[in-house]
Image (cartoon, rainbow, N blue to C red; front, top):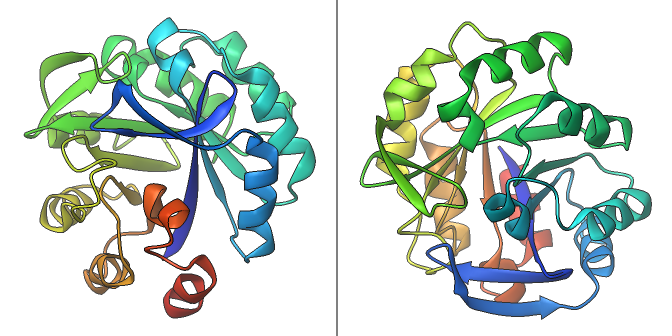
Length: 238
């Protein structure tokens, strides 16, 4: 199982939110590229980046720190937040991003996801963020009537590289991930599923791995707070 250290970008800084609330942010590093290098130096194989401002704006906002991270780090990175048209997808992949994450457009324009997945095999993931099983969009600000599993199954034949499933009520709260819901989703589709939201201890990571069906896990606050030692976690998951 791959562990993806998360760098959430707000106003050019590496931050963490609680429950996706932009008003409840904690700044962990003024230099996101330095933070990314620290994760790489600890041995991570991937980076998970989120343009928080971009998710609300509907277009990239934190392009400069993302580009600085891509230049500074030799490992592949995936990015979500404000990526809602083919031109933006192409631009990010040309700049060295390994994978784009499409969230809001997966609900509002699923044809774009399919087109992008065909054009860029292995480089398009779908981000499914949910409260109580229902998908939320636009930086989690808008809740829909779309159910998580229904949305995931709709992309079964699209060729997407992964589904990143975030339980919003767990995110940033250090309360543990929703292992059961994530595992249920992973069993319902053939697309690899990555867990996000609430991963706050080595035990959480081991519980996700023990399901045998979850391909990866994203952790942010726990790594910044020291609740998870990245090097030890990578060793345990290898």
